[in-house]
Image (cartoon, rainbow, N blue to C red; front, top):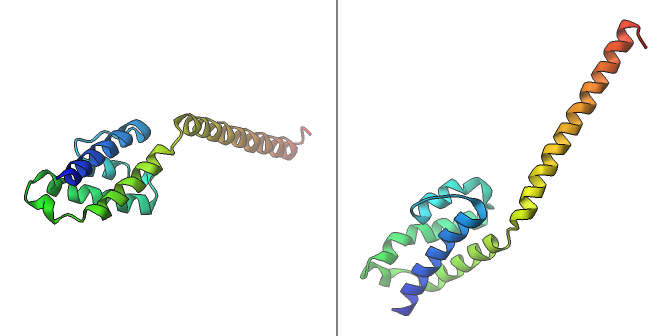
Length: 124
């Protein structure tokens, strides 16, 4: 009985980590994982979907006895380890630097095109 409660709490912790780290809001783990599909590596996504498929069964008293608890515990641990390793400040900084680099590249291309145009018109 302790292991089934443990799986249910691990599923709840996984949903909370998805909300905190990736900003996905879903009522169930299935909804949250589907919304976060592109932000998760394939291996982690498959483990999270394994947990999501067992979420309904874990809530039912007789069906939870059928679950492969050690496999689900490993899957939950792997997903939580990945989500726990996400650094939100680093993600924000990466997004900001990516935006700045694309802006700088666009300015370089624009200035190169302007120089080519001025050269073509004979001003340089």
